[in-house]
Structure formats: structure tokens, C-alpha cells
Length: 111
Length: 114
Image (cartoon, rainbow over all chains, first blue to last red; front, side, top):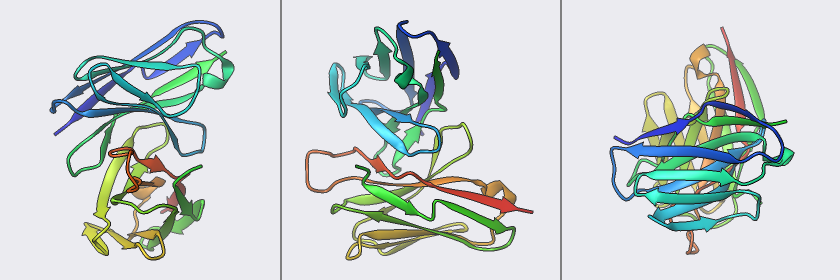
């Protein structure tokens, strides 16, 4: 079965600082990978998805970017964080018939 | 806009009671999924129902799908305190170009009191 490792669990960053969140996947190859953001008490907003190495699709215009340097590695980045980037970030991997497997999430607070 | 919308937004029940929540969506779908999220944690996949299925069971969970009404329901029978969580439905868009991408609703927050 698939396992997603996501870190860090919690992050407090000042406005204007860079960001790098990493997600790695075990137990599968060539997965579809996703980054979601969840605002407090809300549903999930799809930010980026990737169907393969170097292939990134952005769902919404924003201050963030994503990269997939390896088959099972997905990175979410920003050069300069904004207050509005605060939220709960979740990495997910899609399986054949089991829906998504989610990581445990990163709570980002921009101060 | 969100593809799936859950109803109610919040639900409070006592242990042993059944909990029912609904999800409505807008476009034709390939399948619909339900997830559970404990506070501050990642989402856990509960059940997937395909567009050609009408009902599916998994333990104490029962999911129905009515594609004519573009709606689904999740029933948790004989609820337990451990069922306290937020529940989300997620749908894809069968119109093409979005394979494997799921849109989530805002969720139903369920509280089960002993």
C-alpha cells in the first residue's frame, strides 16, 4: 500500500521568507501527486498536480510553485511568503482504485 | 467553485445513533469518494463509489449514489465517540481533462457524544 511522508508537521515563517515543503511517496511508482491547501474549517483547495517527473499543473494563480524532481518526490515552494499563504497543506497520491492517500499535513503559519 | 457540497455543515449525535450526511455535486462524475479527517490531521479515505454503482457498504458505513440527482449520502450506523471527525466528499469531473483530480466539499463536522 502507498505511504506518504510529509514534513514538517508545523512551520512558522515570517512574511517574505522562502518556503519549501517536501512530500515523498512509498509503495508505488509513477503516481499522480497533488498539493492541497485547507483553510481553517474549510474544504480542500487543489493547488498543483503532477502526472510525472517535471510535469506540473497549477490549478489556481498564487504565490506558490511546485516541482517534481523525482518520481516519488513532490515539493511545494515559495520565494516570498504572504500572510495569505497560511493554512494546512496536504500532499496526496492517487491510487488505482482506492482514491487518494494523504500525508499527515503541514500547518503553516505566516507571521 | 467547489464541486461537492456537504450537508449539514455540522451534526451532533449520541453514541449508538446513526449519522447521515449528504453531498451534492455539479458535473457528471466517474466516481465519488468519502474521506474522514480528525482535527489537524490528514484525510483518510473511507470509501469510493463508481458512477455505475448505487450503493456500497464498508463495515458500519453505507454510501449511496444517485447520479440523476447528482447526490450521495454517507450513513454511519451505531456511531461511536471515535467517529467524531469531519467528513468530506470528493468528486472528479467526467467531462474530460481532469482525470485523477478530485474536488472536495467543505465537509460535515460530526460530533458523537458518549
